[in-house]
Length: 219
Image (cartoon, rainbow, N blue to C red):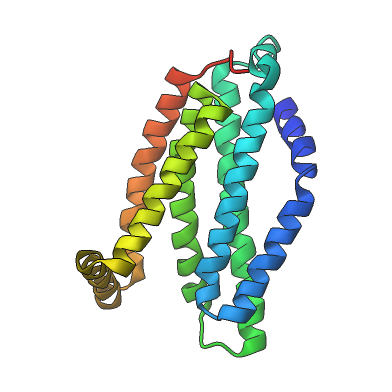
């Protein structure tokens, strides 16, 4: 597995400028938008994480790269396990980076935010990012990068449709307001626990799907 980590490290180095620019943009969102900048900044990290993770998979899949990798002392299970560990590392790194950056700016700007508040907001967006990637990764392992681009467009359309329904429809606003009321009444912790439980289930299904749908012949 060490070889897989080394390979991804060199692939990641090519993206370090994009990662740095993403962090700068997320930091500017915090300065410009205040507390709302946490969600906006994590949303920007979500786009970067998705592109980075899928680009690493695409680099392996091009020119029958996966078929070559599995002729080495690397099994299908080892490869998938490493990619899921990388996925968790990326999301965790983004959440921790956002928490640290927000904490520094909150102190500088004298925001009335505790470390718990910052963690909960960053974790909420991070766990949603993780859920989306847990759906996309097995799809790409099975169908390849080109089909995944179309699939991501569909996912983006669904997310955009959900946002528009909240902005433009009475039933969408009602659902959103009920969620906000529940959070204000019960606190964000209960919602985070429910979402985390759902993501754990998605994780199990995603890992199983990756093992059964894994393809090594993608071009």
